[in-house]
Image (cartoon, rainbow, N blue to C red; front, side, top):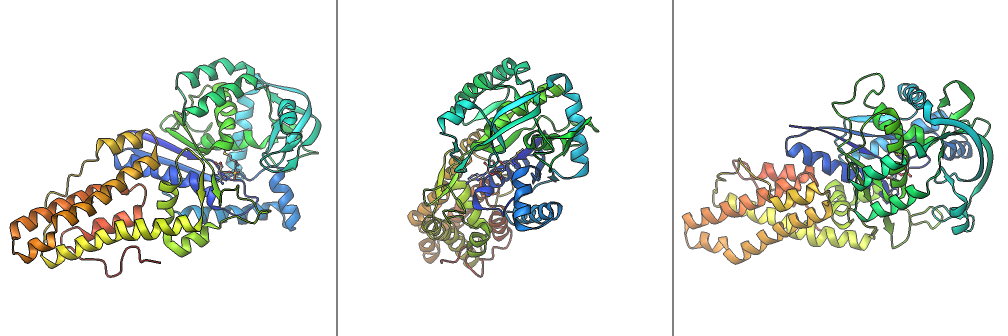
Length: 471
Ligand code: MSP
């Protein structure tokens, strides 16, 4: 048994969750559940990122004191995470007092790599990111993600000397000491690393009120990313408690848009602290709505609560883990979702369970040898490579294969012909194959997998209502 620590990006609380936010959680939860399935011990962090100007300005806009605003929205994210069936163990808010104090201690430990200098350049509040003049020119002064002109800043900031760690970060990435997935993102990061200047890690309080104060300088607050990245270790108790039971993280799940912070600034901070790097950074693609980036101004933001209420948790996780590719961008449309629900969940899986359970109950079939189910190697190989959508495809092929086998072997004819022994053998084979598929399904769709396991233990009782009623 090994200890595995799993982390997710902590969302900004300047709005309510949308379907894109679900990706980190669904992937990380699948990984966590898979690790438990193969008998590892899991610690699993989620949380909310609550500082920075973006949030401060939004609270002001809606006329609510910022402390109250972040508390209300953080709760919305926590409720959302729970509604997705996420088996987390730790929930952190960056406004937690312990986190804030620990961030300051982290700052103090990094002091040898920090210096004060003047920053004259650009900033995007949407990204909460300092923008180089090269990027400014390439994007003609407008952030492509937020469609907002970059802000000009002229201020005194603390800088973090990334240059102290560049070579070591490069080696860690090249040798997979910190594995970046998918592989093709590695090159992008190595290029970015080459061009990375030292990073500004504070803002004057006159420009940013809402943040963790820089220790020993009450005129400055910490840059929100420095504060946010620290959450992965402060939640474990660093630096108050030893964290080596859990750290380094086995896997950190992040969207491709924020991989750069996790692959450059974060390892530099960890190196400065003398801590090992996360084993794997899994960078997933974006969910688009009808082929476009979701945005309030386009009005195409899909509300996850609507999807969950309409089709339930299992269907939600099914779509976001199988039809949303683990690594590439994917499109959400209601039509795709409903097709997947009716054709795959209702037809392939729901009908299969109904058919097998009804036949088994009618013919008093007793399931034998179901106790030791081994996971197929093809499946574990894909899961170990974090290629969850492909692993899910593999499981689905098995489900469809069982359906085909039923049609070929026609157990109902065996029953009619009184071939009791053959029927028993055939049904046992089919049910055992379903139980193997079901075990593989567990990390993806835990609720339905549990129902199926219950249906096929001891006395087989077919479900009174189909698992996935057609809609
Ligand atoms: N607060 C930072 C993360 C700090 S982690 C130390 C942040 N927040 S966010 O709310 O903008 O994004 C949170 C996560 O949601 C990120 O992993 C991001 O990539 C993901 N997604 C946000 N929109 C998404 C889609 N449309 N599709 C898939 N993932 C998306 O960045």
